[in-house]
Each structure stands twice: as structure tokens, then as C-alpha cells.
Length: 509
Ligand code: GLU
Image 1 (cartoon, rainbow, N blue to C red):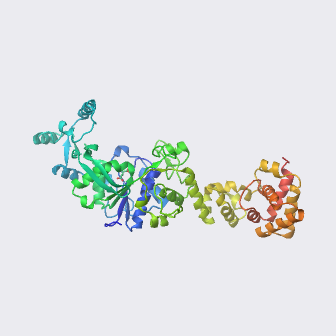
Image 2: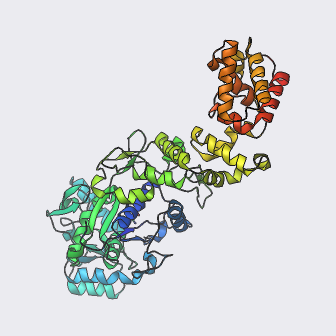
Image 3: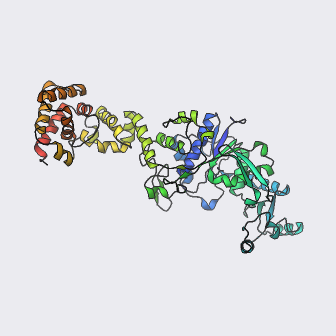
């Protein structure tokens, strides 16, 4: 439990479509906020205007909305800690960079690109790492090496400069991660990162820390790729005098490729045949990447699947609604090691949620594919078909093509079943049975089944040997939903016609 009001943020940079790894980060933040009655913020980190991609911010909003990840404070929602877009907060950062310089925790650097290259080459030639850090900075052009007058003069005449953090040499930087425990870095592993760029605008590091502080963020829950930046962030909190209210950190494990070899990348999805984006994305250049929504996934299934990629409950429960996840989720049960993406498992989740869907929900999911043919026997009939076939498919959009025979006589007849089963006395038995159904008006599943038993007993044949040919004669297929329920739904009249079609049109195999 946290001692501060829980305020968490998802802070994507609008540099392209949101990858499912990012969606999972948003989801975990959301679940955490809801569990503790806290707030979930969406902050758009667009300090790097060069990487800005048209439509990306809207895509983020639409993706979260589709998945039911509601934002409490954000660009669209507003809130008391705005603006929530960094490009609209540009006036807030420079003063903190100044403060750091004045307090001796940062410095101005005037090195030109050529000078920087020269330094790198020199260091590399001496087998040293080419970093601008506690060792190398004293031989560079900055406010630590130049005289005060020189610095002043350079600034007055408009020389370009940046602000770099001044990290100590060989100091241990320790912080606690809610998932990984105590993390220790040595400051010598880091470099004097740029905080303020030549144009006076902040880098990600400065803007991120200042905003997390000003927005009173209690927990920073983000991807593992940010772990190497965390010691720098800890130093910034310390140097800015904000260590008391420093957020707690939780670095989530990577989502790995299905074979476990490396991080699941944006390119992997379409290469391996599954979506890695929540919604279909069309790049400004017109390139299309597939999305979960367009591939027929239900949002609840995607939420469940993502929740389980890196987190698991204390028991074996696998199916959770988002409300149940809010109750059960905990950072302690997030794993430290990467989670392999599993496409079959994703489909399995969708299948599970389809089975739980009501016929009305299914109807809405297939709405675009419904034609007059599908409604020719009325809405109630269509709903029953959807309900009957949902357990046979992974995606709702597979139902109508699979159930073609519910709306018209079979488009094709399985040749293999015909060859193996539609021979000898079988066609006669099936005809007799169907005629018997009509004569006795056995029009419900139970009566149809018991009449098959009666007929089989009278004829001295196994009931089982008649079932598959019966299904085949009516649907053209080898398998399908429970046979008598299917026959009841089709109705006696339709079954009679199907028998005629088989007798007249289907040649012997
Ligand atoms: N803007 C960073 C990103 O794109 C945010 C990282 C963080 O959460 O601190 O992921």
C-alpha cells in the first residue's frame, strides 16, 4: 500500500502507433490506479518534435478507449495538473535546469559537434568508453573548465550551449524497484546526460522528472527499457531536492518474441502473422499494420491476454474481466523476466470471451457481415445460430461463413464423409428416419434423438453409425454443433428439403 494518494501516469511519445507493450504498460497503470482508488493520467511526451508522427496521439486515445482503459486526467479529459502535453509545458523546464546549474549539479557545455567527435575518437583510441562524464568533462569546453568571464562572454555573443547533468565519479546509486527489489548502479556506468538542448527545450529526462514531480506522480510503472535511465532520474530527484516525494519505481518485464529470442518488435507482428498493435494503423506513408480490433478480437480478451503477459495471480485462474483484474492485480506478482508472446493463447482468450458473450453481443460483433440471407428466417433464428456456433470458432467473424448451411442448402458436400459413410443401407435409413420425424412430428432435439434411438433399435443398427451421415446429408459437413439442437433449429420442413437435395443432386461418390 502506498502512503501517498496513488497517481500514476502513462507517458507515451507520439512517435507512431502504440505497440501492445505500451498498451500493457497503460493497462497495469490503470489497474493499479483503480485498485487504490487513485488517478490514472495520460501524459503526451512530445518533446522530440523530430520524431512526431501525425495521428499517433489520436491513435493512443482511441486504443485506450477501445480497451476500456479510462483516463482520469489527460489532454482530452483535462485536470488540475495540466497541460498534459509536454509541448504545451515548454515554459516549465528551463528554470529547473538553471537551478541545477546554480546549485552545482549541472553545467553549461559549449562543445561543437567536431569537438565532441574528437573527444570520442581520443577516448576510444585509449580504450576508454567514449562518454561525456566525470572523467572526460574536465578536458572539454564547459562552465566547469572555462572561466566565468569566458562563459558569460560566450553566452552574450549567442554561442550555442546545452545543459548537462554533473554526475559524481564512482558513486553507488541505489533505488528500490517494486518488482525487482534493490537496484544498484555505479555513477561511472552513466554519462552526463543532456538536460536542456541548444534550442532551450528539455530532453526526455528533464521533462519527465519535472512533470512527474509537478503532477504529483506516486508510482512510475513503465517498461524495462527505462531501467537504465532510472539511476539518472534518481539523481535528478536528489539534485532538485525532491527525493522525499520521489515516485516509487516499477519496471515491467519485456514482451518477447514467441521464440523468446529478443523483444517483440513492431515489425514482428505482420512478419509472424499476428497483430502487435491494438488498432489497425496506416502510416503517413500509407503502410498498413494490422490491429487486434480489425482482426476480430474482443477488447476484453485483449485486456485479459495482456494482463497475463508478465503478471499472474496466486492461483491458476486465467480468465479475468477488467473488474476482476482491478481486484487481483499486484505489482509484487509481476515477473522480473520477459514474457513470451503466444499467438495461440491470444486466440484462446478470444474464444473464451466469445463463449461468454450473449447472442445480442455476438449479433453486434457480426453486424457488418449480416445480409438479407442471414435475416430471412428472422432475427431470433439468427441469434440462435450465433449462439450455437460460438463455441466452434476463435473469432465472431468466423461464425456466419461456418454456419452457411443454416441460411441456405449446403454450398458443398464433404467428399470424404460421402465416400466413407454414405453407402450401403445408410441413405435408406436416413431417408426413413427423416420421414419418420415428419410423420411423428418430432420437432425438438429431445424427441429427434429418442426417435433415432427407437429407429436404430428397430432396424438393428447402431445409432452412432447414423449420426454422421445424417449431419452430412443436412449440412454437407462432417462436424458442427450438437446435432439434434442443430436439427431442431433448422426445422422439419428444411430437413425434408435437404434430404431431397441430397437424393437428387449429390452424385454417389
Ligand atoms: N515517453 C517515454 C516513453 O515513450 C516515457 C517513459 C516513462 O514512462 O518514463 O515510453
